[in-house]
Amino acid sequence: KNEVEQSPQNLTAQEGEFITINCSYSVGISALHWLQQHPGGGIVSLFMLSSGKKKHGRLIATINIQEKHSSLHITASHPRDSAVYICAVRSYRDDKIIFGKGTRLHILP
Amino acid sequence: KAGVTQTPRYLIKTRGQQVTLSCSPISGHRSVSWYQQTPGQGLQFLFEYFSETQRNKGNFPGRFSGRQFSNSRSEMNVSTLELGDSALYLCASSSVHKPGTANTGELFFGEGSRLTVL
Image (cartoon, rainbow over all chains, first blue to last red):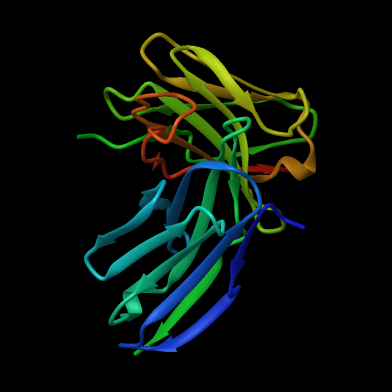
């Protein structure tokens, strides 16, 4: 079993829909990162969380440390949000970064 | 502010050769980490450097090595290349405030170096 699990693996939605991507992890962490990667493009950091909730524009990220779970929400989704979203955690024990397999999001116009 | 710069962007090597990739972090960032991305395995952590010292290392063979210079620029080297080393190699920099704590800094990624091994 992977130490970082994301769901769903693939998601197709209509423009304007509310999107939720989930990340569950099994190790103690010092931080959790949400990353975005467009096809053929580089990786952009969206959020770094250690507790609570952060909001940036139409993006919201939450984390529940006790439940070892984080969610990334996209409100009023747009075709330009189509990308792979990757959850990554920094392990508290050895400071290494562990990645989820990513969620491929496709927003239809 | 200039972003993270990786060179070369693309390169082709043959089995048995060695390769060196370079990463220049954002000015002022002292932490540089390296990652391998493949279609099958996704993103995997290679190693991380802070102030010229390797802080930690992922589960890769000793053929993968790296170093960081006093100006925070970093290089990674892969010796005796294998076909399976074909991948996108990414580096990221961060301004680490307190290593080993939650204040490890947001990661800023370069565009990557795409290595093809024939």
